[in-house]
Length: 240
Image (cartoon, rainbow, N blue to C red; front, side, top):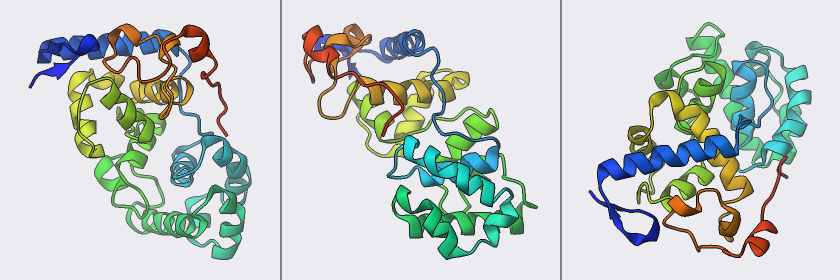
């Protein structure tokens, strides 16, 4: 199936793969320090932090997790946690009752099914309460070094703007993008895209005039193209 490249011209599958990989290289040069912006020390901490990050900024999660991690250092501690105490600690992350249910349920399932160890396989992770493919891929890629694509809202928006896919279903997007890039690049590419979405390619007014991908992006012009105006839209982390 033909897709649209920069300038609105049609491109072949081979051309799309080449463009996608070139865009990834540009993002690598632009964000050489791209990484997971959630603070964690082990797979369990990352799993908990990622559950908390739903509908919440990484900055807010990182303000809460030091207290949470200190109170519940093991999966058994989470499994037997007092619900009201946990809710109070994570209240500021939003949806704290549902997140408490997920964290306690996830911990209990790990204790019952996996001997108290966070599993390192996608099929096992997604079987845990509150853990979907996005969360599982975050944990696999950053705690177990197993390549995975983190299809969050930034990722979905950007790959559609890039003209890589018109899919809206996260799982379908994951498969489409996975076929465009080498598997070894999946995890770090996810970070680069998320960083780009937070800093330059915003949902409402992308900073097109200073975007390093402008020449390769069919959506160039969705935001201000004047460099001076665009520069005012660029944001830097940490994100609140």
